[in-house]
Amino acid sequence: MERSPRSLTSYTLGPLDQKYSWERLWELEQDFKREPYPDLKAQKFMATRLKLKEGQIGAWFIQRSLEQEMCPPLTRLQQSARGNTSSASHKALCCQPPSWKSRLIPINAPESSASCKHSC
Image 1 (cartoon, rainbow, N blue to C red):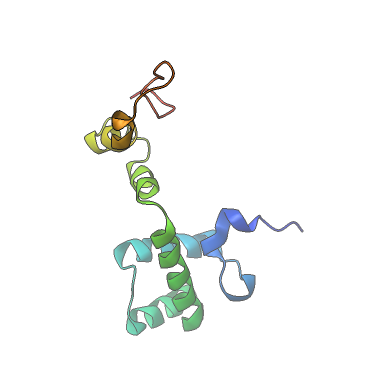
Image 2: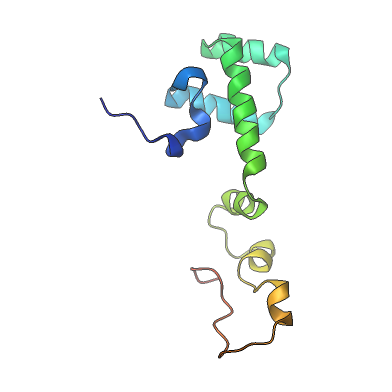
């Protein structure tokens, strides 16, 4: 039986590389969206509902919140937009050259200013 690559599900693995079912992961993600830092009472309720140990719930939430904090803000913005490239914030962050680029003196012919790989 092949194991899935760790990089694809880094925050989904619990203590001792326990893999959670897709249903449990979905429930945990929904709970995380509602409350990223649940108190002990909420963790106990989730553990009972998902038939997991309280420590597993706590460890999953800690690991998931660390992953979110380590994720660059632009990546978080792109994940939340999910393909919405027409928004003003997308164009300001993705489709415009960085502000420092306009202060540089070009050596070669100017390149295309579109930095994203899609048409906005």
